[in-house]
Image 1 (cartoon, rainbow, N blue to C red):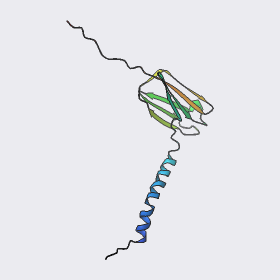
Image 2: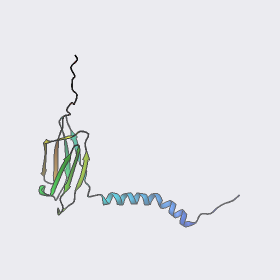
Image 3: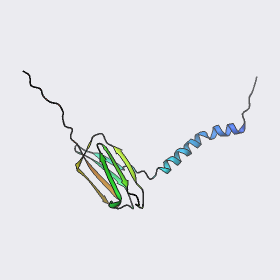
Length: 126
């Protein structure tokens, strides 16, 4: 019978590998603390309502952009805190019926859903 020994360094490296991956994930998550997600997303027949916690930032320091079905909320450069979030919604947004308000560090964004327009055309039969 033949037994092969393992070096202590190899045993230590393989036993710590799962722990080091967990620590690496922890560090990556900690570095992305500045990326805020909507705390609450509610939808009804006509709109989506998104709620963000943005303490320490005034309305002049925030920018909300809408492009088709993607909504981005960012703080401007020079703001005391950095916030950045992007959400892709299932339907396009009607900017004309959308609104946003900031009260006591809570940003509430109400986005109107764009009603799909039928592009079908009826052909007359001769």
